[in-house]
Length: 466
Image (tube, rainbow, N blue to C red; front, top):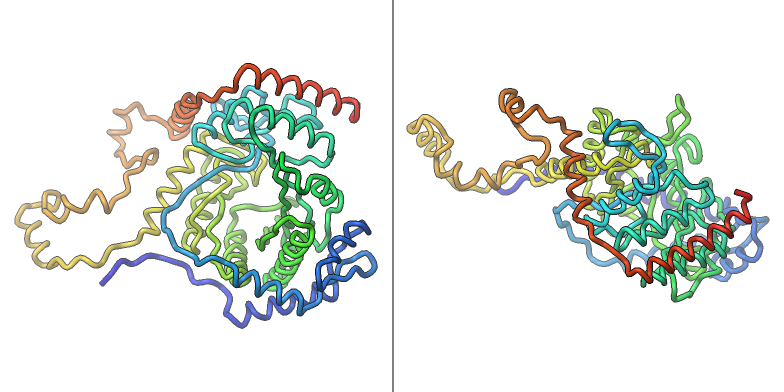
């Protein structure tokens, strides 16, 4: 016997994967990707195998197959490190107030406090919460200022397409001794290029004072891609390959990553964490591995719940467990609710216990012990209990997971401890984490950032009339 580690079988047979690629290449050759900017199209068409035709970019099948083969051959060998880790989330539009559970726009002070929470965890990503007390046109600048003043590594990535605003963001980062991260989402489903975003990225290509990256499409089943699972994978594959080739042609590196997100036809919205999301996710992970030659290790907590409640607990645990059984090991969207609309510090703490719960499951059962079962039973019967046997004493710490929040008290012990609620304990622990963030810029750096922010405010107000 050995260690049994649970896993899920992928949904598609190998011939199915090949047919999906074949259909995707036909889509790229016959339908192509819409590109309304002739200058952008001309730059992309410099890539061998790409031809502009009536406002669309078409890709020759042989050229795409060669590109895909090169991608697969350059993939590093994959390793299955079974340790689960968690990182950050997208910048929430709203804050779930931990004192009242009311979902509302955040103040700048609350956004700064949540940046401190992420700083305490050593996170390098976008700020977890957008300030809701500034005009919409100023949100990206205000969030960047918060990230710089209240964390060591947070910032960048929020939407910006005005090159002058980008320069303000770059200068603010330089004042803090950092490098700005410009991210432009340039692929739009179905099969369309956001040329304005491409132009913004191109304006800063090669600039040493910032990093520039592009992001791909988000096909939504039944809305921006077919509902049929195979057809949705065909479109997602076509979009992912086109995005990769376009990124390479424009000098931004690229990469192949697929998505298919479900759509709710009752409420007309994208759905994260549902049973259908899990099913689509299994197919997407398998298809991505087929294209890249590497298992997908990055995933995310998912839910449409608005507050950290029973709904959130169900979908977040199910989605993480499902992905872990499919081989995912690193999880983002921590503390993120209602798709990506809400940030909750309580949920960010609860997610740790969810991840630990899943970690224990994928650890499996060690069936390799060579002890005599009859002898073990005889020893326990002789002692009247198995608590004190050598086997139990030597193994129980490594066998059982002892939850931090989800403690296994009985009712009397819970009452004796003051009947604490999970949410109140989670908020208390979040505040303890926040208190450990001691990041401070020098007074000169803070002064320079504030001066640049003030100048940027005037520029934005002058352009938007706010």
